Length: 334
Image 1 (tube, helix red, strand yellow):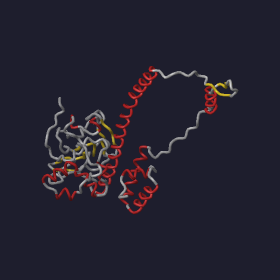
Image 2 (cartoon, rainbow, N blue to C red; image 1 turned 45 degrees about the horizontal axis):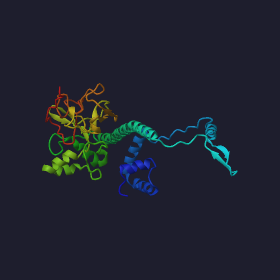
Image 3 (tube, rainbow, N blue to C red; image 1 turned 30 degrees about the vertical axis):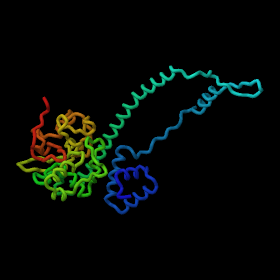
Image 4 (cartoon, rainbow, N blue to C red; image 1 turned 120 degrees about the vertical axis):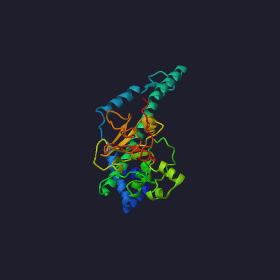
């Protein structure tokens, strides 16, 4: 096995791996501190959503065995002596031939059951993708908090005012270069973008610095995967990065915004909404932006621009290639 993936770590924590795979993951954890740290963060996430809880034990209803025996006895056949003198059993219920009406009835039942089952299955899959995306953002949130702890001013990673790093997506390379995240964490399971998941890799900041022309444009468009990140704010003509104050409604990351959606909402999750990661580590799925629960539009600043915030409390999330300076005004369609 190469370096264990996030799926292998999940399988290890849930004890769902084969014996040899379990041993290989343990061996890798013993000499890879970074992988061990990722495993601990993943374990905390599993604990939060209750996946490691032991199932409750329920006793069978009283009298279940007796009622079962009575049911079997009632359904048993009656003894009959044949002309040859042998003993056999004849069913109490008379036999009947299979009719076309039975087939029609069965087909109607199947259609009715399918009309209930398949929408429920689709909704369940949709909810599972939302939950998986939220776990991805929580892991990214751990990385952002770890990065801020390393900074003297407790600032989060963000774009620069100009140069190759003047794009919101530079957050992902910075987290990866500090070993606070891996490339797979930046892929949403309900992304609208067709990607080679196994081949996706977040570039290092040095690779972004060396790139030019079309190569630089390509890196900027894809380097943060399926998520958008905080672009900081402008103060006295200076671009400043957000500082960690554990604010409850200040957005740090989310499903990436899309220019093809109304109000630049994300096209992930079939365009039905987006997960937002806040500074206090909370992740929330929002269907309408802005809403009564979140008055601050996370994809535009207060002047209506796709750009850095106008003050320290104006959180603006940009897609991977979005620069921090204003480039376009987005109308709300009214």
